[in-house]
Length: 176
Image 1: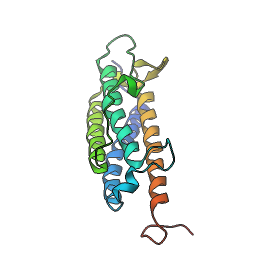
Image 2: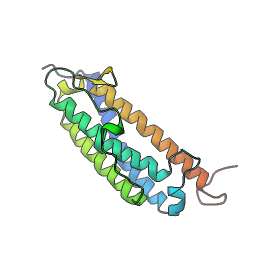
Image 3: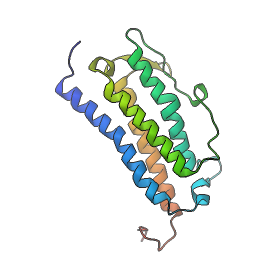
Image 4: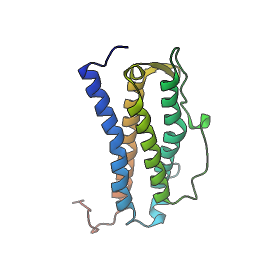
């Protein structure tokens, strides 16, 4: 089993660090979101658009019902190309509407911690192992990079909603 090159190891470390960053970000966001009334966190900005709580609930479902099982499939597959879960319909579909935003954030952080344990336990051969995702071949590196990109999109959407919800004159409001 060949060892990872220095560049491959650096790339893996960067991806792992970015995945871990989400846990830190959730802690920081938890403090900020406590200053908002539940009505703002649960409100949809437009019809069909998810609320802040819904964004985090969707992330929680993806972490626990899609991403962790997919990483387990990568790790367990010694040969062949495992087929990865690509849709929430293939995973669990519980109703998170009755959960408080703080509870949902806690679920996301716990699931991400579990995902990080799997990532850190994976040996070098797993990172380059290929699986099938929505008909496409992906490596674990590709898959985790896509997870990081999705994190960025969720955090961007949450930041936008927070900014739009904060009244002018509130601490931290920087509109000119």
